[in-house]
Structures are given as C-alpha cells and as structure tokens.
Amino acid sequence: MEQDPGFIAAVEEAKQGAAEGGVPIGACLVSKDGKILGRGHNMRVQKGSATLHFRRAQAEISALENSGRLPASAYEGATMYTTLSPCDMCTGACVLYKIKRVVVGENKSFMGGEQYLQNRGIEVVVLENDECKQLMEKFMREKPDIWNEDIGV
Image 1 (tube, rainbow, N blue to C red):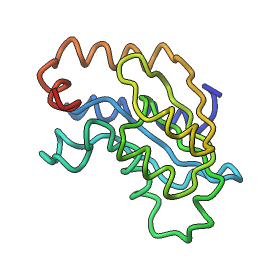
Image 2: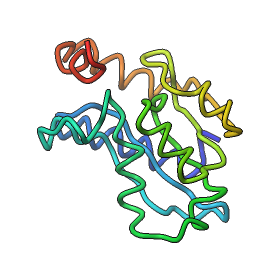
Image 3: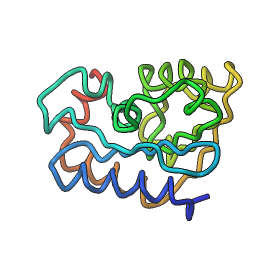
C-alpha cells in the first residue's frame, strides 16, 4: 500500500507543505476505480488561517476541495490517503462523503478520529510509515510552537 500512487501523492504533498514552511501533512483522495480525484496539504501556516486546518489536518479537506465539485457518487467508495491520523473535522468530512477507506501514514505523532471512522463502518489502515514519522518528528522538534498551536495546546 505504501507504493500506491495515492499514498505516494500524499507524501509528496506533505513534503511540499514542509518546503513551504508549513505543517508536513498531505492527503490524496482516490476514487474506487483508482483515479486520483484530488490532493492537498496543510496550509494553515502558509495562509495564516485557523480554518484551513482545524486542529491540524486540513490536508484531507484540501484534497476534497481540490477534487472540485463532484456528484456524491464520486466520493462514495473512495479512499483517502493521509500522512497523519485525521483530525475531527477531516474525520467528519470522510464520514459525510461516504469515503470507504482511510489509509494513515502514521498515528504516533497525533491520534485523530480513527475509532470514530471505524464505528461508522469506514476501514482504517495504519501503515506506520517511517518517512511520515520522520517528517512529523523533524517538524515537531524544529517548530514546537507551531505544532502546539496546530493541535490546540
């Protein structure tokens, strides 16, 4: 699954966010037939916005936004790839759009709404990906003030 184009795109987005000085969290939404619908990364720092992350993630919301205006059937059965466990807002969006599966790069840096997703019938796969862990550990070590702000501490 770590070689899946959706996961690779999510990691690329996380790296782009880091290169822009932001929180290194990326996401990619892939349709049930394997087509990338949208991808994005956390933009809270870059845009100076509290709503473009809501407690840290925004990457999933960005991926949905970048998918454009699609019929509900386009999201149903899709997979959301994300480099970090999704926050409450992004978890809710996955439920609302009937995403079938959420693939998480890592959840040690932050544990989001995985249990809620599972309770709503959404499959959650946690990869414990080393690259995702390293991106977040480096960011948390180098920018603890931004990380704490991002998670509401």
